[in-house]
Amino acid sequence: MTKTIAIVVGVVMLLVLLLFSMTYTVSFHEVAIKTRFGELNQDSIVREAGLKFRLPLFADQVKLYDTRLQLRESPLELVQTRDEQQVMVKAFLMWRINTEGNGPLDFHGSYADVREANDAMIDQFRTALRSGISRFTFDELAGSQTKLKDAEQAVSDTMLAMTGKTGVKPVTVGISQLILSPKTTIAVLQRMQATRKSLSDAERIQGGAAAQEIRSRAEKEAMKIRAFAEQRAAEIRTKGEEAAAAILAEMGQERELAVFLQWIDAMDASLGENTTLVIPTSFQPFNLMNLQTPVNETGFPLPSAQVPPSSVQANPSSGTPSTSAPETTPGGGR
Image (cartoon, rainbow, N blue to C red; front, side):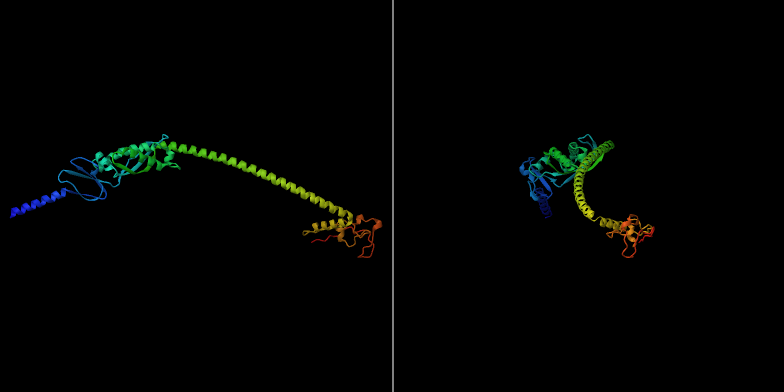
């Protein structure tokens, strides 16, 4: 009985082992390569995840590969740019197994596993990095009009060309560090200084030309305004002279009235401020302030020195003849 149980248990274990050898599992992040008696074909690629079956024992061999992103980072690499400047570049590469077409078969034929691919990838990546960066000048990599994205794409394209038949698919290439060597730093600073000087000289020349243009335009405008103003002033002056001539002609008809009005204006101007005048009233126009001022035959007041003997008349306010004004009379002030 004991022997029978042992046989049954042995048979069951053998069946379990046989069943285990006939199944395998593919995860969602894996791709499987199944070989039958060591031969590969299109059906050897298993992309769908889940439980799969195979022939027992050594008839079918299955190898699983991780299809998730892999990261490789290059050490600081001395690279010469297109303008012969040396820079230290550090970059990273993210890649995965190409699951499209015959990509898994190519990877299976090129590498034993993902770790071996990572080890082999670093040399290819350094070569692609030097090749891609050397297509650009330093200013294009680090200047204000940087083309760093284009440089990263160039490295990625070079890497894709190098790994096209190995089942490796570069996904992302990034430059994480860009360091200048001391020699390059001095050369770059000198070139930047020369560039800034050229820009400043160009701006200065352009500004001088613009300033000259503005001055010329302003002078032309000023000449136009000045010519218009002079023409307008001449017109106004002509009209004023015409009006003055008419007024003078009118005043010539009444000379004594014109003199009298000028005396009034002169007194108003001289007494326009707080003033104190001590002056004889025999002088015009202050003879108007003396009520004893003699008048001529028309009643026009005259200074004493201008009264002709035959024209002396009595002042209406006093009723007595006046031959001369007092020699000195204090003038009024405000």
